Image (tube, rainbow, N blue to C red; front, side, top):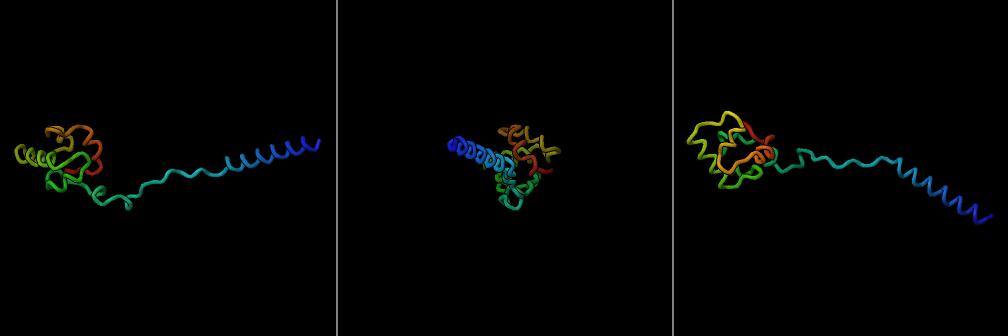
Length: 105
């Protein structure tokens, strides 16, 4: 009978411990504060005025695509909407989606 009582006590203790752990608040995933982001990810880029270096800070835009944006702008005039970037060879919807919060006219 002593062994039964000991087993029951261990089971109850284990259940109570598990219940206490389950009721503890689960920490949420860390949020990225804009102050923690590198400065080039915070700054907006005016696609009508930006130079090659500024355009190159955009995700998916290297030196060649940056130059293509500048060339398109020089040949066709100012962009009237960020979606006009789709007219630039090599720029797709993914590039716009990845950078939408940083693009401005």
